[in-house]
Figure (cartoon, rainbow, N blue to C red):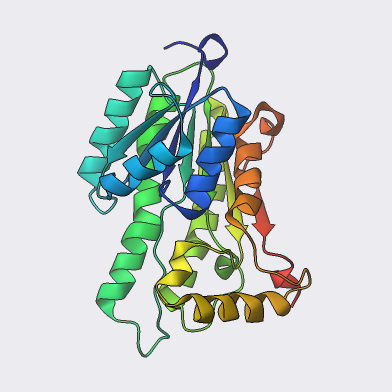
Length: 259
């Protein structure tokens, strides 16, 4: 393995990089410089569109299609990425789904899907990536994207809230386990952020903007977040400045937990 300080670029995997927080994180890392990005997700066309929109050179952005519900696919892709780029420096577990339903209305299928995408996939990704990182002498950086719902549950979002709470505990557990290998594991908990995630539940521009305005007005800072608000925190955890921080949970919610 070639140490990252001797590499021209540090390889960082971002799941869900085609839009929202993942896309803005990729954009910010490219602007910062020094990173090679591997965008990972199921929709290859969307990932390729994002890569083209980001305008990175072919040496800076690659896309890899993978069903995050398939652990075998995940492990093969991680092995491929590590082999292609002589190691992996960072992983951003950003991909997720939002499940609606309370105790009475949450079906077993919706529960299983939320746990598969929001919890099991990050676990498998961490397991596979950490195995590659421990083979190197420099360690690595893992950043998991949870939610304020993992701390203060969202109403009628039982499976989602539980899966995001579990991501926080996964982060802390892995931080204790992987510290000896110089691998940091940290977590960000975004609040309401403008993203395609909400478009599916609030179709139409007017309805969506009314939703953002109403939710933002209830927050101490008076607005909902932008994806770039979260991307900055993710970038920080990937930098050398954060090399002595692990097991940390950073809330980025405009003051939602103060309510």
